[in-house]
Image (cartoon, rainbow, N blue to C red; front, top):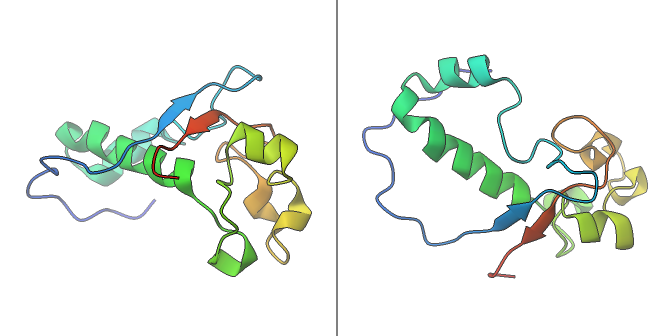
Length: 119
């Protein structure tokens, strides 16, 4: 993991949020939580920024829409409903980049439940 530039101040407020819950598989598929906690802490350099970076990572993953070469199709890639009911968990949804169908933890699971009030 590359070293991140140190922040002078964490953001005083955020203007968006998502709610993430475990899906039927009783986990978040890596959307919440760093892939490598020790590496993540080492990369951010300051333990005070652990939660803000982790929250931004979770928000990005919860809202990621990488279909159609990054243009998106309006469906969050890791949401349980989109993965199970609308095909976001299938490799054919990402032509030329089938690895994008995997959850952040590397599994092909169903994913977490995600609610995005901005969508």
